[in-house]
Image: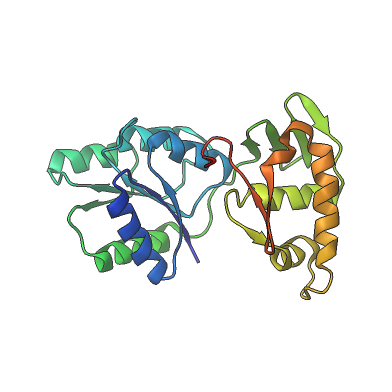
Length: 232
C-alpha cells in the first residue's frame, strides 16, 4: 500500500481526504503545516505528497521548492491541491517541481485516480534518506551507526535494525508480531518476549532519547516524534 502524506490545514477536508484514500487502499499520514510536512519527510519519505497550496505558515509552493532542493526528497512525487484554478497558479506550481495539480472542489474518485496515475508514472524507486534525525537521535544508514546528541551509541547489528524499523515508522504502532517478522525474520509470534527484552536493552543505551520509544500497552511499540507529539 502506498503511503500518502496529506498536507492540509482544513481539518474537515483533511479527514474527508484521508477517509477516501484509506477506502481506496492507501496508507496515510497527516500534516497541518508546511513545517510539519518538511520535518516528516526528513525522517521518513512517503510514496507521494498531497500538498495544499494555502497553508498557515509556508505556502505549498515553498514546501515543494524545499523538498526539491533536498537530495533526499528531490524525486518525491508531489500533487498540489488548491481552491485556486487559474492557469498562472498551475504554472507556478509546476515551476517549483509539482508533478500534478488538482483544483478544489474535486471528486474523491478523481483524486484517487490522479494519485494512482502519478505513482504509476514515477514508479517505486526513490531516494531514501541516508541519515535520519529524530529529536536528539541520529542514524547513519550506510555506516550502521547511531548517536544521541554528540555521543555515539554502541549498537549491535540487531539493535540498529530494530531502532531503524521504529524510526522509519515514526508515530505508527509496530506490533510485536510485526517487529518479529521485519527485524528478526520470524513468522511466528511465539517469542514476543524477545522483542520486549531487546527494546529494554535498547532504551538503556539511548539515554536522553529513551523516552522516544513508547510502549503501547498490549500491542507493541511506537517511536514518538518530539516535533509533533502533543501530550494531553
